[in-house]
Image 1 (tube, rainbow, N blue to C red):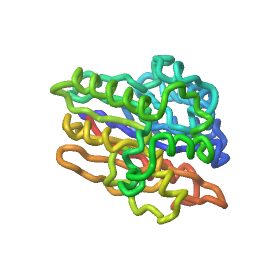
Image 2 (cartoon, rainbow, N blue to C red; image 1 turned 90 degrees about the horizontal axis):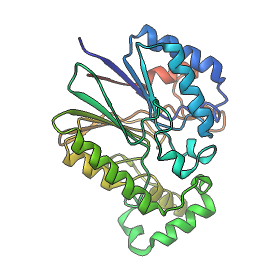
Image 3 (tube, helix red, strand yellow; image 1 turned 60 degrees about the horizontal axis):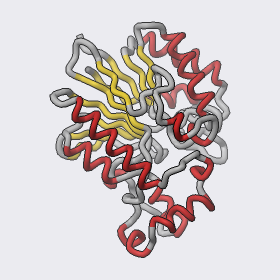
Length: 275
């Protein structure tokens, strides 16, 4: 009998002013009713890691032992309540960053990694005349990630992502791998980039093309990510299928939902996989 796996990203409960008590209760009831074996959240749940951790601890309590809950952190989760060292540590059994979840009785494992960026998703023309220092300076001036504790540079942080990911993939040799990350791992799903200086610079902070190249080289079966707040059809490149279905913001001034309420938007943007 196959195991049902559901993955969601970019719930942004606080930004969208969703009551977390209502959210956790309704999500738990739905996951139980759907007999979901594993629920993974791919980041950006709250703008505070402490709240994010507390939320998934409560979700695990409510769903009970028949559903395993796991989560990673997006950039929003990392802006408050967690240090760089803490974010890289195994601080909770539910925290899937740099961890592998083995699914007993199947040939499938789920590897989680928060991800980061190394400027390789910026347009080639932009990278030709901008240095890493230019991108870092722009980030510190204009981008939310300036609030994230990071004693190492962006490229060094992404180098760790690549190294720990490759180590996990090597350890999972012969297994079917589902990889969950927050940041964008492929240029193919960046979409059209507005010809404005701000948005051109933002692309550098979206993720890493090198991560996708690594995942494809190891024939990872499925990759689920978020961050872009745009939804795409699954895209298969060689042996690897990318899934990008973030829930996004639900504000009057920034409405990214195509459903009348958050719960319907959450259910319709779940990525469903089996093991």
